[in-house]
Image 1 (cartoon, rainbow, N blue to C red):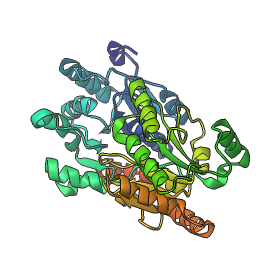
Image 2 (image 1 turned 180 degrees about the vertical axis):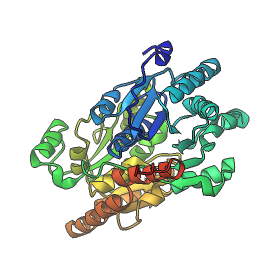
Image 3 (image 1 turned 135 degrees about the vertical axis):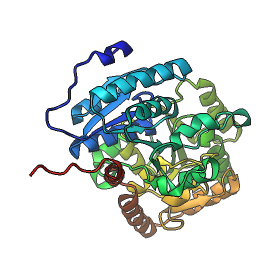
Length: 403
């Protein structure tokens, strides 16, 4: 749909009143922000809301249609100031025509358009603060970031993000609602991974029957800590020169960063562990990949706002090793469901890996039970959606039933 077409569309509003939420984000391609928007649109539709999503489009639009949500296309992926203002006018027209009750912004550029549109139409505006946004040179981007704190309610995806918003942006604590990002614990269930699926994964990647597997999932970008993990593997090999049966899977696409991919492999060769490191570009069965793994690693060199990998691994009952910064300490119960290491410290990471790999069978079973229970209790997608719907209810109360 071209931008000019959005004002010409006839209203698809039903005769009976349904509360309507409009979510805005740049596009619907793969990613945590996008996954959260789609999950919430599905939950809104299931709860009786009318779910509208506006973005520049992408492959995830199909999921909205299957769930009864609606998508409208606008170039919200632009950061051009003139286009942002034009998008604000178009969103205001859409809000009026579709009788939107609540606007939910998930990213900065579309957030500015949505904020202005919500102010113009006098509709409640909320945001989800998804990450620690860069302040830019001399902090010049702080004002640009500030739109994500302007909601009547501001959802923080972790306590770490809540504290960051209070400290850096002066957000009043009473406006913040901490709602951890949720993972699909129904799909990420070890009992649902059949032996056939596990065999397919181990055969495709030629994993040794008598070896140990360490996995680092995440896109190939430098701050995800691939080099740090390679250095830790080299340290483990230095401690035990006969220990060459550890296979390290780095699962993630390079998204055009072919030079970084080559640098990972070159670094592994320099450290003498190139035979142990394997980059997997495409994994179409992540639950089975987790089940094929002895230890899941998050090695990010800068704090993560949440850390979906850590929660996903726990949902699958896998031991997790993660840096002691960002939201990881909220997700892991140290010594019970995983281990925290000193961020950026090779020796600390190697020590944590040694502990995790040394677990006997009984200890692994106890850890798996604790990890699964923790993920289901604290980081389930259904719980995330229910808590977010409760925030919506604070600003748009449930309509009273007609007598």
